[in-house]
Length: 44
Image 1 (cartoon, rainbow, N blue to C red):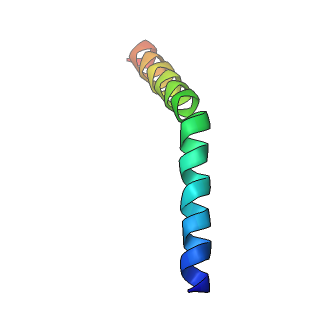
Image 2 (image 1 turned 135 degrees about the vertical axis):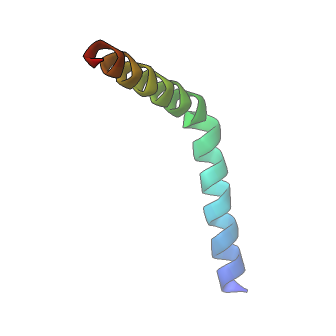
């Protein structure tokens, strides 16, 4: 029972983090991907 409570708290925290930071993280990842592609294109 205690493990279930702790697991639920963890899930709640992860959902909160995704809601709060998810769009920002995805935007940063997309920028990094574009920068990498641009660097690779410049080398070729």
